[in-house]
Amino acid sequence: MNDRDHSFLSWFGVAGAVGLAACALVRGAHRDDDATDDGRSPTARSSARGSVRPTARHTSPSAVPTRRDSDGTLVHEHIHAARTFNRGSALLAWAALTDSGIEHYRGSFENRAMYAPLVAGALALAAGAHGGTDRTPGLHGLRHAAYRLAATVGVVGTGFHLYNVTKRPGQLSWHNLFYGAPLGAPMALLLSGVLGAVGERLRDEPAEDPQLFGMPAGKALALVSAVGLAGTLGEVALLHFRGSFQHRAMYAPIVVAPVSAALLARAALSAPRERWWTRLWLRVTTALGVIGVGFHARGIARYQGGWRAWTQNVLNGPPLPAPPSFTALALAGLAALRLRSTEK
Image (cartoon, rainbow, N blue to C red; front, top):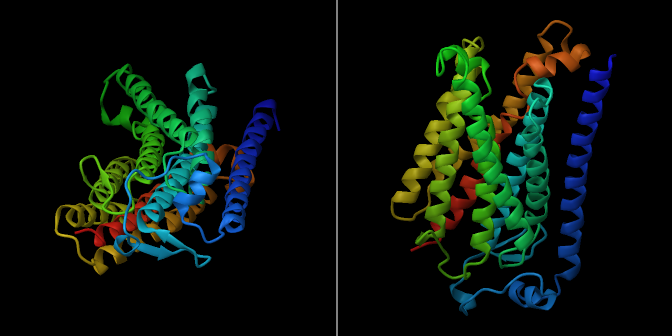
């Protein structure tokens, strides 16, 4: 095994350590929440801690939609939605961190800017893991800063990748789109930042009738999730087209994701009501992301040497971190749908 392979193993170990640290952070924060759940309202506990700002307007408890958390604690519906967006952001950050680490390692980190998504992705992952267990209302400054950094790096990265494609002979040709820097890859980091930042803004809204971007929060969240699914679909369609749709399962995200995006957009733009079919389809999309990892792992195994030559085949095979993007956005869509059903 040469020095380059040892370097790759070291980097992969760091990525694994980051993932384990994020899991530990989630469990630790969950235990902290349980220990501090002393019967006071989330706003009262937030004021006592002094770490986040309480909601701006007084609301009547009877008018505020709530739901029970996994441990039986009552949580305001908009806080539950915000936590789900934090978790979706963490999953997208993990996908962006791992994918950019593999791809930029393959590019030998030729440009120092290629380290930026690793830093931004790790920070967004930690912020999402913490926010996913935080029941307190109010915007968290450090998390919000990490999300804004991730979104900024995602936008700048898209510019770098576009330049990489257009500087090649033929510019925006199919060949360059297939084999140049992937235009959609930095978008995962951008979406991670957007989902997390939107979740933080939602925490800063009152529990009764929360608003985002001048519209009901559930409507805004559903539109954000729909746009994210549509954007992710573009990159998947391009790469599966490059693979000539060799397996019938490669059509699944091309069929499932646009339907999910359309159903979410319809739920956002129509009158609020229970939408069981949209909920069912989003659950299918959630499973699609998990199943996709298995198919990509199978694709790597089919390369010469299989997983025994993983240091080469992980670089050249189908990207393992890509499919969970659908899971993250579908879970965010489910949270938006629940909040939308409580609106007037």
